[in-house]
Amino acid sequence: RKEVEQDPGPFNVPEGATVAFNCTYSNSASQSFFWYRQDCRKEPKLLMSVYSSGNEDGRFTAQLNRASQYISLLIRDSKLSDSATYLCVPTLYNQGGKLIFGQGTELSVKP
Amino acid sequence: EPEVTQTPSHQVTQMGQEVILRCVPISNHLYFYWYRQILGQKVEFLVSFYNNEISEKSEIFDDQFSVERPDGSNFTLKIRSTKLEDSAMYFCASGGGTGRYEQYFGPGTRLTVT
Image 1 (cartoon, rainbow over the protein chains, first blue to last red):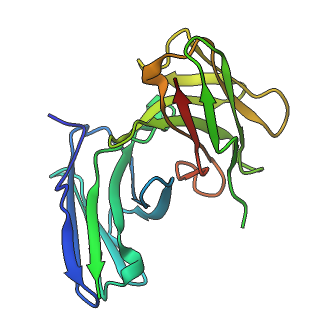
Image 2 (cartoon, each protein chain N blue to C red):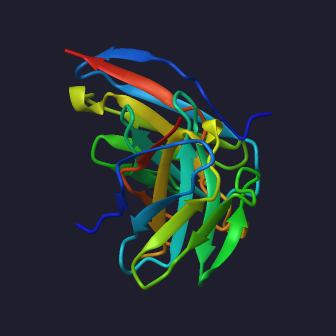
């Protein structure tokens, strides 16, 4: 089983749409969780941390279900600038805090 | 806003040559990392560094690789004898500020081995 699994997409949505990404992770010892976004040939940029109780940052809402080892990201009112690859990233404290990346989900927001 | 910087942005080298990739992490961070991304593939962890020593390394990080923090600001990755398969984007990251395990990435160095 892959360490991180995401639907690769691409998700093609119109501006203003709401889009949801799902992610599962295999290592139940994972302790911190993040969503990063990556534009083509650029560095991953931290979008938000994911807390157990769920958290919101503007148009972005993240949820974590430790029992199911499942993380989600909801983007409301999509903008053209949201087009990127979204990476669900768990981390393990006892391994130097290394981030574990999957292939990510590609989002394309069209006018 | 503080950011991680990396130099050079692009490095072309011949197979068998040594390269040093340089990074300046965010100044109050304590944890430093190198990752790489081969074109079209996922980002892969190479090594983490804390308190002047390696805390974790991946299988990729073999004897050809080394890291160093030669002074209070720079963090370097050295590849002793480059191979064609080392061609990739190399990202430096740092963390351990207010959110300990949040990591911030530099813009990367594109390494091309010919």
